[in-house]
Length: 276
Image (cartoon, rainbow, N blue to C red; front, side, top):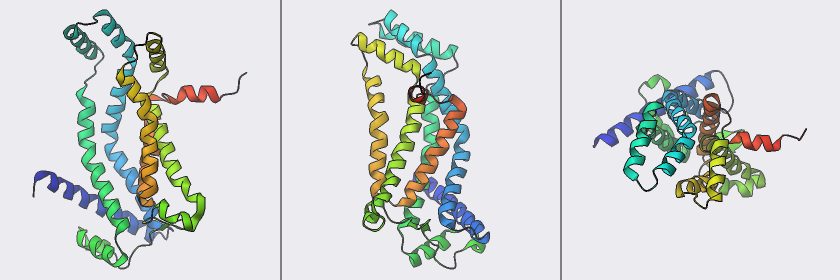
């Protein structure tokens, strides 16, 4: 087995055991819908573990946004001289304590954990009851937490193992709230992270000069396209995965607000405020 598979299996085992422990604790306390709440708590727990890395990434992104006007001036002053632009950019990064590699490093650290969490959730919501019990008990580090019966996969009456597309005929149009909420939370998080009033000013100036670069255009489009894709995907995936994703997004929104405020949402809220 290669190192990547070993790491994946290791993380998968830890996350599954954490879920079972949370489930047993909630069941012991006679909390209804224990599996659904265990999934939420597990997602929050993973978010807390990743907090130092995501916080570092958010702070670095915020710094990069703050120096955007300076980068624009450097490109304008040394237009055509790519070497000089690169030198001045690195000098600016150094002055403001920005390390471009930080984002990549934090992503590399987070990615295996998120993949392990996703694959584990996909597994537990798709297995049949008896197969699930055997699979979970085989993977446990402490047999005192083993399942004696299949857990109830319903969360407030909604089966976590079913997708909204399969439940439309049973629950009606109400089930569309799941993919809509998933897309909305993802949009809010993206808007906070990737758009600021300062960037809006820069984009307007670029449009006036017909010099809007590809990166700005791609960022603007992806802010809407990615949440729409996530929403459509959640319509076909088990609701248990949407529960995880929405919890993950809500926690990310709160974390982003704590570090950088409303970000791009500030402009939206300003427009929604009644005129005095």
